[in-house]
Length: 434
Image (cartoon, rainbow, N blue to C red; front, top):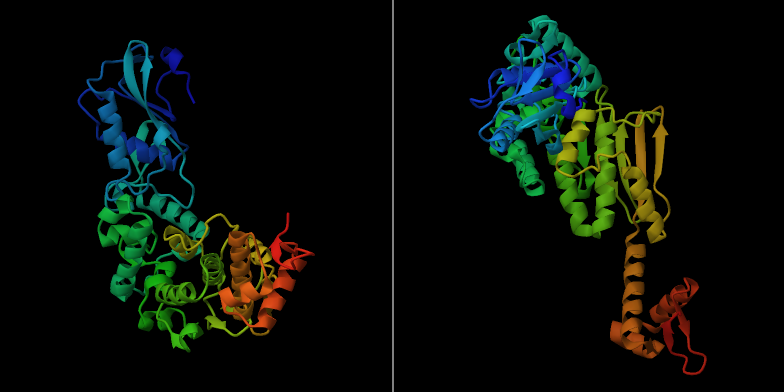
């Protein structure tokens, strides 16, 4: 953004701020961080002053690397700074002129990340950049940023008629345990429950400054009573457990996930779980919403209220992001393509996504015939045995794998049709095809 080798050409402006920082990180640094993030971004220079002649000059810092490390420690603490917008390489120690300085590149926050604020409340800790430098935002400015945020994250809007007590403690605890297992090094594992809920957008600030559950927070963690009040007719039906109604999306997903993982191979279970998350994230929760997962001998069926649209982003982006945080969704928008690829690799019929306009629901069908899975497992066992023995007779294969003669003959024919094995014309034994 600037040529550090020509530092003396620059002076402070709306995107460039110098801090002497010889006594440590100045408090005003954080106001500038917030201001840059909420305006158009900018560069912070620590160990630099602006001279009376209006040009930059470096000064000696006793330990610039320590300053950089302290900055990173604070900016990644969500209880001190609402969001860290930086990558690690955007905080650098660089030699300029005769001194080492700290260069911090602050990007402009996205609408869904604003307001970027300091401390416990956006209404007292939000700053912007103006002609006279950094200034604390008025409440009306903060509210405007929040409205823009909710346009990007519609299910991130706080629900005024709900309170934090409407969230189910056991669901939050279970989710945090999953999060800690998936992301053991995250700083979010060390913060308070309320701060954690803020970070995942399960709660947010209402216009009066109070913290309220968001729509996504209620869907993910809400108690049965509040969910039926806010989302009349909501049904989360896990038929894998025999018509078991779950209270919220967290309990519903994790209950289904446990059963799917116990009954299906890993990559198939991943595909089913990904499809379930997509159903939850794309569902329409406004009119008697129904989410259901069921299974028969031929396929898994996942039903959600709503209609197929051309939009690729989920209708409930915050809810989807919560699942992404525990690696339940790929987060790249390619989950369905990966599911199709896995099913194709297995030689199974392609998953089908259909909409029923009159019933206002979407049905996702994933063929997962247990008979087919068993057949493919037996085929693999035959291949493994022939690989070990180099070649083997049908009788030997039948005896070793405890198959009937009919099963053995069918499996060998299937593998030959797939060009995986061939029969020796003399011995009649089977071997891997060259």
